[in-house]
Image 1 (tube, helix red, strand yellow):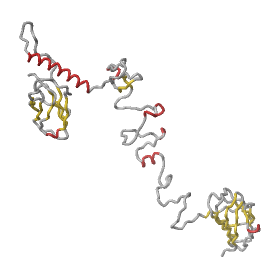
Image 2 (cartoon, one colour; image 1 turned 30 degrees about the vertical axis):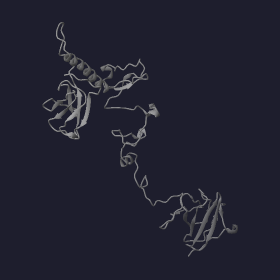
Image 3 (cartoon, one colour; image 1 turned 120 degrees about the vertical axis):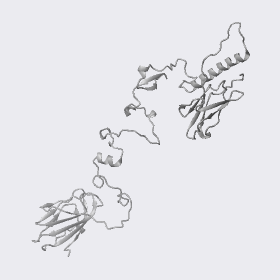
Image 4 (spheres, helix red, strand yellow; image 1 turned 90 degrees about the vertical axis):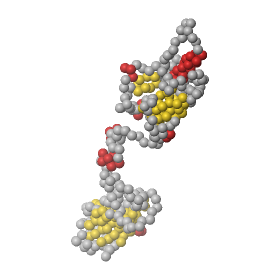
Length: 341
């Protein structure tokens, strides 16, 4: 059998959508045993699983016994046994067809070797000639990863397939660590002590951090008021009234509320409040006790109309109102509303 051997790759892969086939190949073979057939990763058996048809030019096709499906891959690869079955003897016959078969076999062997080499790791042809691509020994590379040193030579580096690591963040080159899009699976939750939450869920993270919604963390509410934008309220708003402690000197803490109340059990002084903030306003309700006739003096920050300090209604249980507006660091503009009935 004599025909040219074409310069083609001695391997072709199909999906199994053609069923039993035929699945053609364009590389030449000398016998039906010169080709191996795989269904996915399973090596099939000639005659039992498939038959080979060889054309006059050495190319041909494979027909399966059992139909494949589109989910399968059918791989045809040159697999002529690398051996010499004939031998020329001195003084013996030297026929052209015998020489052609020998030469064809040699070319086929070379193409098979080239096809296998193309599927292996290899350095670019432009690499320096001093690159050493020999792998480390079995003992040196056991349970290790394949890596490359600063010269581009293969080395075995620490780590196993069960416990890959990136090292500490401080040891990573920022130009070599990039995560974008997709998802990351199999990551151990980062402990709180290491800056994480110890959980992969929001509820678990809150529990681990000791946070409770509506207690430590405010629940989302689209109607939550903001302090830095203009808003229109659709329901009544009110401030808590804080009761002041009665005593010789009464001091309001303006950081606690806007509105205050106090019942006088003696003559008192309303001292300058603490935590004045310009723009704050409110009222202070001043009530006489059951005895009445209590007086109230004022600290220097309390400013009244025309500078005249008002006199309280002295009737027992009488109520007076002080309406105020903080308009300076030491100025509280105040309006006295006496004897509220």
